[in-house]
Amino acid sequence: MKTPHLILLIFSLQYLLLPSCGYRLYRTTELPITSVRIGSVQNRTAEPGLQDIFTRVFTEEMLRAGLTPSAGSDHLLSVTITGYRLNTLSIKDDLSAEYSVEIKADVMLHLPDGTVKEYRGMSSEFMETFVAADDIQSIQSRREVATEKALQDLSQRIIAELIYGTLKE
Image 1: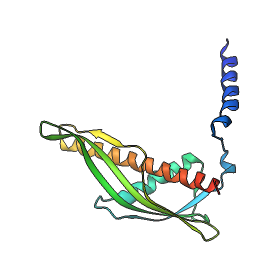
Image 2: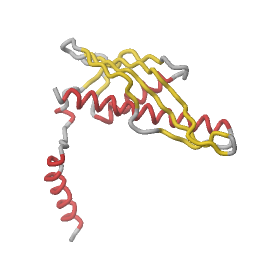
Image 3: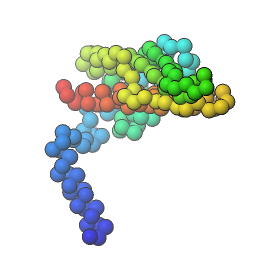
Image 4: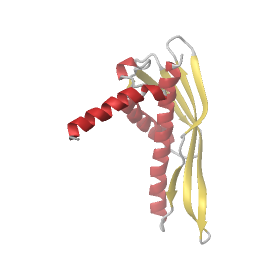
């Protein structure tokens, strides 16, 4: 089978099978929310700078999802980062060898009709882990990468709730 025919067959099967499994593809113009105004982002943890990293990462994830950050949007998002934990997962020779980062947040979405949706205790759906290296600088840099990834996963979950939670109504 030639490559163009194979590609056409794959797209045809995808088009036929995707709706039967409960998924639906949406164009960004069909989404109920097209823009979001990021209001206050508060950090109630002892980890400095999480609010700044979250704002940057959340904006990037919104753009990837087809949403526009806009100061004039009727949808206002407020986020309070309520928890940051660095957990030891494994120990080797009496030293921590593997860590995980856990971040929790309370999210409020103010809709144009005046209602407010609250999502309490949201966290990333995946465990962000890293392996400890020999020197403290390496551990710190790996922790920062894992923290950013945890905030990215949290942002994706918030965006999914914004889009699909609104679609259900």
